[in-house]
Image 1 (cartoon, rainbow, N blue to C red):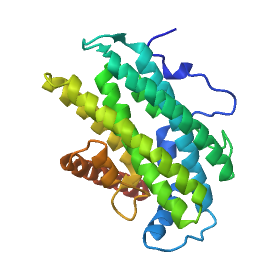
Image 2 (tube, helix red, strand yellow):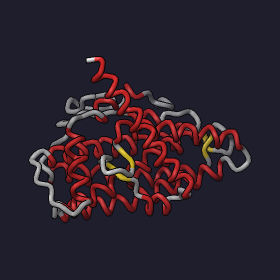
Image 3 (cartoon, rainbow, N blue to C red):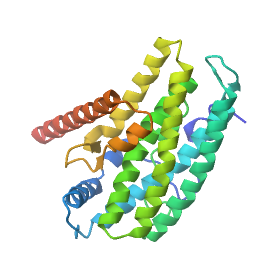
Image 4 (cartoon, rainbow, N blue to C red):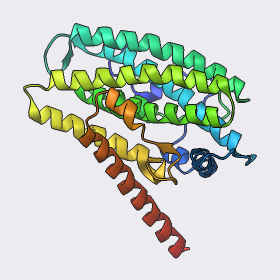
Amino acid sequence: MKRILPVDELARDERFERIKIEDVVFDPRNATFRQSAKDNRQGFRMENSEAPDAARSLMHGIFVGEIQALEGAGRTCFDFETGEGREQAPFALKLDMARQCWDEARHVEISCKLAGHMGSEIGEFGEQVLLYEAACNPDPVLRLTGVNRALEGLAIDVFNTMKEFGAASTDPVLEFCEDWMLADEVTHVKMGSDWLRRLTATDAERRQQALDFQRAVDKLFSFGGFRGEEDENPIHLARKFRSLAGFSDEEIAELVDTAAEAYAEAQAMQAAGTAGA
């Protein structure tokens, strides 16, 4: 078996269609979900007929993300020799990743059933593969920050938002399932936070490289205003759960700033495109 398996060799059947992350971020259905989430936060029931379609699209994104998270955690167990060196992974870290595989496999099953519950099916929407690409980093510390802290951190925000959406739309199945998976995601992010600090305790340069990689991934997934703390952001930062997962107040504040910066850049690009037209 290959180590560091490239993304184009992932096993997928004919139901899956590969798309770019930009196609997800700028999907017009996100605007509908954005308005729905905003109205729900203000205490109103969203009656827009397109809102369920937007929620189903997000659920499908969660489903394929769970598949890639399972693949990424499994690859970390296999890709690195067991040891304490810079290009190795401690045995205890591999045990944590094996435990995460168990969680992610359960999440795949839950998300697949939730998609059916919401009237969707596998392959109705495309699959972007940034999560798995982050899981291909040859440095296990950068892999942990890119996946467990950045992308699993995003999962905390997404699951919390979807849980609130389930409550607002009086869907107890969606609300319960998202709350259940949210608890696991807090554990996954906490593992990433703990291992980052342990593996870089005597290597400040490596820690900075890992945090820079995390910021790059965070900014990409905030692009277009997808995540933030304004009403216009469909996904809101779950501050309480981020804190439980090992994020400091300063790191959470930086995430807010990163999201605002990404949103401003997207607005500028959109304005420039409109002016050019």
